Image (cartoon, rainbow, N blue to C red; front, side, top):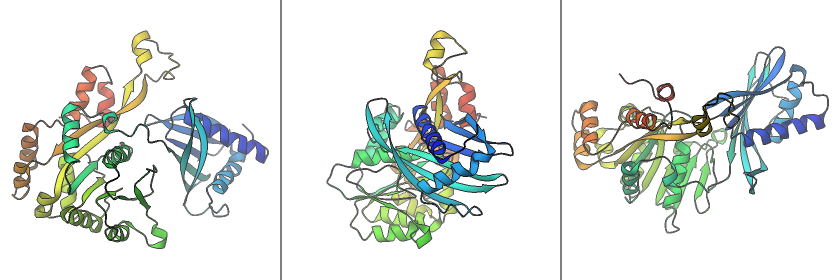
Length: 374
């Protein structure tokens, strides 16, 4: 596809955005190759090819996106980050603002751009919509009733941690408490909550923002990501001094989170006195309901993929008094896990396997997202 003028470029980009939204894409990838530019959408966790355009049109499209994102169009040697927003109509019902995070990266045939699509809608932010089973939901609701302590949401990148965090914050936001967040960046704007986006270019990193935020009389603090020892220790100190703290870590399970915290310099005494609970999660693709009924391999509803939509699978570990006592000993992780299971906890793979037995997803899908059990 050859693009010859600016108006055609603008029309093409608007078309790409609208189609991406209509197909429920979370990211748009624009990739320069030797003979063409490939445009792909990430849908339900997988990349799907949308179209190819002429390689000669690549720079024009990249420049247009850079201008929209307030980036330097002359700088092609270094990565850049920017953002823009546009208004679209979701589900043919109402218009909504979509915030877009833009990342550029030089490649051998030209710059690659990835655009993350973040619709500004908090209508579905409710903990009952997150995929918790009855035991897990009750446990989470109990944790949120504590006036102070640390709750951690864990999982790899793209596992839905941010949505879970925002849903928990919305349930806590009753107007009687000062709720503040430190994020990189703030992805969904929530009314009544004070949100800080870090800016490392000017020196506003997580530790500096958190220290300043603690002087703002907060009741509840949300930390978008605990990345380093300094941030982890500030989070634990805040949890010990009358604040309810929610945060995320990139770990694979609740038990692995404890090892990660120890590696970040958090001692067992602090963890035993501060940690309220840990959750771990993955996003699993759901089997297409139309395919299940019709047994068709040419289903237009899921484009023949056999899956449509995703749901979160969770592992929830509240810390009961006996578990806190164990943290202060030279415990073995397997012993702590066994004790947690005696209270009703189930591991990720167990919960995902239950979904397979219900026909919601497939064994191959959970093994690809969680891994095969030994």
